[in-house]
Image 1: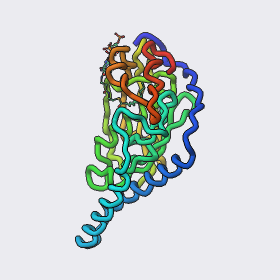
Image 2: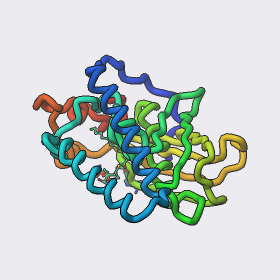
Image 3: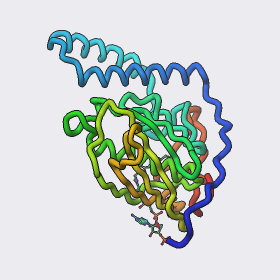
Length: 243
Ligand SMILES: CCCCCCCCCCCC(=O)SCCNC(=O)CCNC(=O)[C@H](O)C(C)(C)COP(=O)(O)OP(=O)(O)OC[C@H]1O[C@@H](n2cnc3c(N)ncnc32)[C@H](O)[C@@H]1OP(=O)(O)O
């Protein structure tokens, strides 16, 4: 730890303008799948009804499978410099598992709100510890990013101080604690929105902007939806500067 708490870096300019029709359709499909997932783990309808629904879902899946992208191709709605990740399992509007959480700067913190569902259950009626860890990872990573300090998670530490209830509004708050070279240390909390000062989960993460060789290994063959080289990795903050 060599420097004081970071001043916020400048946010990258948000000039990305995705196709609004695609954005609306993906958001709607994500919401529909979210409802399906949530209802599929809550339903108590008869076995025959569940089997019928499963057959219908398989037909719909086959329609979506008509054309797909591979893991090296970004979605047409994604933009790395601005961290737009439509299919993030935490913040992606297009992802049925995601709560989803949207993060924003608020003073010297980053704040997000969400409500977890039965699809995130661990102990009955409460969040799975791994789900809470996922929320924390995204919160801390987004906090680093919104401070102009993109990095990959090198370390994630958690203290589970109270069980996190499902179907109850939550508030997530992240803060940059320290910056040093390519490394950013971030702390964060998860609490009930109704009791924001009572921490249920406390986390600390170390985010490291990878060396150029690693960036190339991980993201070198990433392309945009139209086949171009994905912007972002070449300029990534290997020296701790803004993307
Ligand atoms: C492009 C857009 C895509 C954008 C795509 C969007 C991605 C979203 C990501 C969301 C967050 C994730 O889940 S990321 C996924 C989970 N994480 C991962 O898969 C990362 C796996 N780990 C790695 O690849 C590597 O270990 C890295 C990249 C983290 C670091 O490797 P490196 O680049 O070689 O770094 P290295 O030289 O070893 O260390 C640099 C400095 O960091 C410190 N450091 C390194 N690791 C640690 C550690 N665990 N705890 C403390 N400090 C550490 C070192 O002491 C050193 O400090 P000093 O000597 O300089 O003081």
